[in-house]
Image (tube, rainbow, N blue to C red; front, side, top):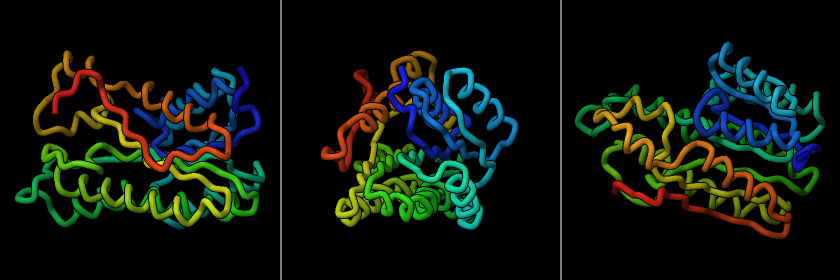
Length: 244
């Protein structure tokens, strides 16, 4: 099915986890996908999968915390495709030493720079083109850690996700006048590679009961298929079996 045949989608964190699942979902719908990530080799693998699944696109090796690199990506993508319809900000990380008595200033800065400033940088780069066409959708993949306190994720991750929620809601309130919809998507625990950073290992049974990356991708699909008159400022998705 070519549900997204004429759509151009920018995806951060596209080499694994939620970002890769979202890229695969849009590729199945025939979308043009701009894949962003730091690992060039893994980006190429993701790009090959996108093409195999029926999509097309380009790779953009970059660190979303680098605003100039994101601006350069936006320029190249807009030169190639002329517009951007959807942005999915799914790049995210955490550090192992994450409690307040453990975390370093460098660890704090890195989490905030990628999780929060990275989403800001990509949104900032996309919005002028969206405003020009008076349409667009930005999905900021936040977390339930952005709406409630979960001490296992640590102080920096918590701050980044609460910040992403606030940024998303403010953006949504400002940009609806330009025909642009912004959603803060708050998944519960998801079985993705970020779990390897947990100080306490996660069992295979717990991973099985968690949301899978494909579940989050299907939620993004739902948002992308809504008519332009319908906006979802924020949405929470949790596993049926919840550990917390």
